Image (cartoon, rainbow, N blue to C red):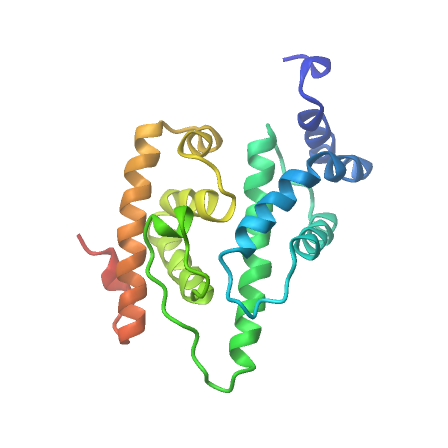
Length: 201
């Protein structure tokens, strides 16, 4: 597709990927509302004592993007996927710091299921989810990426499939498997069991 016929955001993404640092400064205002919406949704899943606000989270995201190399993006879906990954790291780091400050006071357990996307409880253990997701990534990277896209970026099944270049049916199947896998891994962690057992058939 000729560059002039590409959507403006895609043009800016490709310019940034090509090394145009000024493109990021043009890009962020163009996608700010969507980034803030993602940030608001993500923060609604956090503990009540979470101090981050959507605007602060987006600002922190911007600083991380400035420090990044720009990556290679074909479209806005890939950009928002990376933005969600950065948000994940920001939120998890903050959760770990809160946990460390409690002198051994544990964070609450979390049950991983469809409710994490549809109607999540406020007080969840983001650190446990992050650890389980890292374990899943070692076992099956694609399934872990699907969870990240859906949970941290809020992509639909269809958008997730488009971003990863796989069918909707594959996304649905992997998403269902991942929910069960993560639930077992987190339950095993809570009981002090070996989390590698979660990958068993």
